[in-house]
Length: 252
Picture: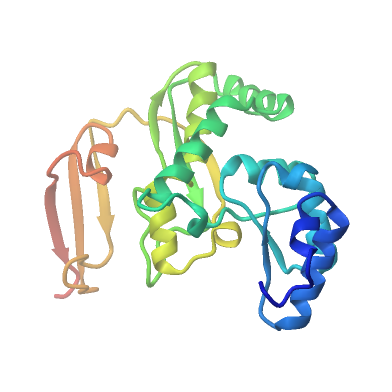
């Protein structure tokens, strides 16, 4: 910072033009990627104007400390990731980010056209009990398993309950567990994480379970394994019960 021209940092706190000048000067000092961090007060000029000035000066990206700041910039047409290293020391960034995102899904209304499309299709089925499930871009992969990370709601009844289950399914992509797991596996949140919500007529199963076409413990591909339990399948996949295990071999 000492290499900056005298007065530039002081002026940047009161002049968006100086913000761009700061960034241009730093760009001349380094070839590294530059992330400009914008706070909600925007140095007295508003976060969107300050971010735009930093980008104009040559910043590679804009970063923020929390979900509120990210949304303020998004409304202004600027995408900004929440930077974990800006979070309070000792606190869990994944848990804080998840709580903030979950609140937004609870508080923000669904667009009218989307809600009506969901409900119109639900009514066309006769408004039966349904299952609301996820279909994410990051499901089970050769080197990563996302099983059980997104929310599933079973025996959903009524329009209000259905829309609430859709919200919960979307929000579950940003659970603390999912955020932390993607980070450990090296997945980029903005590019890799997306989820569709599937609404299915519920099958009132007496017995349900999971069929593995290879033994999940040994990896043997000549063995089929079923884990099953009484009732709906969520008890099995959610680890709520110890299932009955059945196996077959395809070798003579």
